[in-house]
Image (cartoon, rainbow, N blue to C red; front, side, top):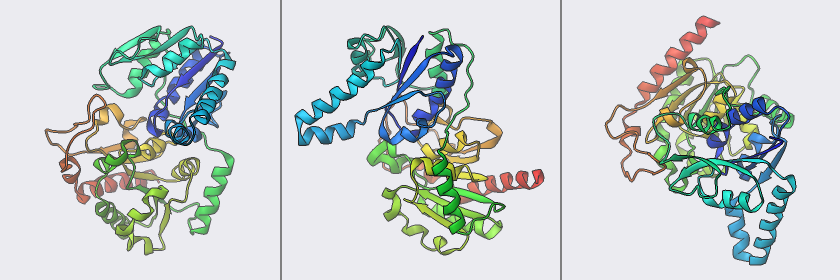
Length: 362
């Protein structure tokens, strides 16, 4: 295989789950050229990856906006993107989109081998496919590896990778220094938001803000640590509940102050990262940071943290109806009991256990 194209138009966690795929393909085909088609929100995960030779950026939302303003501008941009892919003359494509549009385009462009998942019989233009009704029973990465086995790729590691740019690492060093975080400080990351891929239903994946605030108070009370709280620009107006803890000189407010690359670089500085089931949690796994993740509707066995299990604690409620997110279908639940059942005390107990282990290790 001289030229390979990977297609994944989804979010942060989904793209990070494909980084083992990149490594496995390069190991099997060491002289190959690897291209990757992704949306612009995930470019930072791949643009510094040493095994990715070229990125192709496609964002459906942007194209929709262009189409509303000018149909001809939309066609022009679409054709420009197609021409870029065509010019590389790919031999093989790994299409993880689960829709037929990409494999149809690959067929038109003459890509001879087109591997992917046949979900809802959308794999009509794939040459090699695995039938799936959704993901369940095993981790997403296992499904990706099953697909690679069709290529006789056998040696696979689950290790996630996120290579950060020097400029992002420098930004983080300066940002933390300005906020009086020293190199020997114990830095704990808190990400109370997340779930952007669920759009308007993101709150269905988020543990209540006031309980995250309670966790921060407990950390400040019990440990000599610094806390950095993460979020995007969209979360700036949601942080009123954190107003009192943000007054502490030991709390750094990074909400809306980092790009994705800077976020990854800052998470990499943390000793512990506490979050909802979210993209930032998977970034922490990629940066080999210990995590505590709070899972509600989603099955942790399918979308959970990747890495040494001893480094990643999962907190969930033991109720019959969870996990209710199955086969890519979101729950219709107005009262998220699976999250409400998780108390501050449950999380603080896990924190104490982790901190004791860290103290013993010195």
